Length: 113
Length: 113
Image (tube, rainbow over all chains, first blue to last red; front, side, top):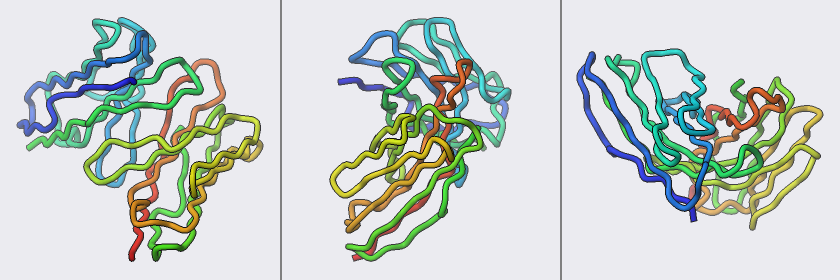
């Protein structure tokens, strides 16, 4: 079965500091990968979408970026965090472009102070 | 791109029924339903593809009206374990964005004994 490992699970960062969240996928190859952010009362906001190595589509032009250096590795980064970056970040994967369910990682809770 | 869910919150007694609605202003290829417990990742419930199909899983079922770009999730004879936040995710029927899943703000369901 497909699983996503995501880390770190929790982090507290000061404003202006860098960020790196990482997820790796097991159990499938060439998945579509997603980064979502969940802020309080805001639902799941799609941040980035990737269909393959080096192929990243950005949904939200903020101070976040994503990279996919390997087929089953997806990284979310920021050079300088803002207070508004706080939230619950979820990495998700999907086998096939369409008609497949998303499987999620455990999530990373980020608090920016 | 984000679908609209209603109601925002539902409170039920065990054994009662509930309906959660999801609508989009875009033509949809598919609708997904997920349930999330507090602090956890969302868990997949079902996918409905265009074609007006209806699906069921135990006492949870859903319908998809592609002409109206609407989907409804039906929970019958609710159980305590049904408590959580329900999200619909929509996949827009357009080549450039196919594969991207956009989620609503969620419906918080609370079931009391």
